[in-house]
Length: 132
Image 1 (cartoon, rainbow, N blue to C red):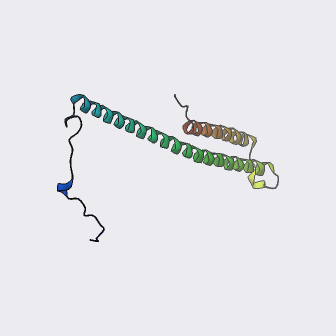
Image 2: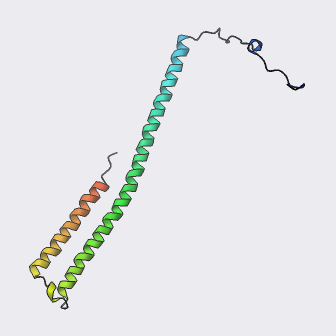
C-alpha cells in the first residue's frame, strides 16, 4: 500500500441506518409493489406478443412478395409455351406439328381457365382479406 492511499473500509466500518419509516413496510405498500410488478409484467407480455405479431406480418409480407414473383414467372413461361405451340401449329414450316381446330380451341380454353384458376387460388391464399 502506498503512503497516500486510504485503507478501504471494513465491514465493521460501514454504518447501516434504519429506514425512515421505521423499517417495516405496510401491507398497502407491499400490495402496491405487487400491483406495479404485475402491471409491468403484463405490459411486457403484451409488448412481446405485439412484437411477435409484427415479425409474423413482416415474414408474411416477404413470403408473399417472393411467391407473387414466382407465380408471375410461372404464368409468363406457361403462356409463352402455349404461344409457341400455337405458332408452330399455325406455321406451314412444321408439317409434323399440325393440330386440328378443336385441339387448338381446347388448348387455348383449358390454358386460359388454368391460368386464371391458378392465379385466383394462389392470389387468394397469398393475399387473404384481413379482418380488423
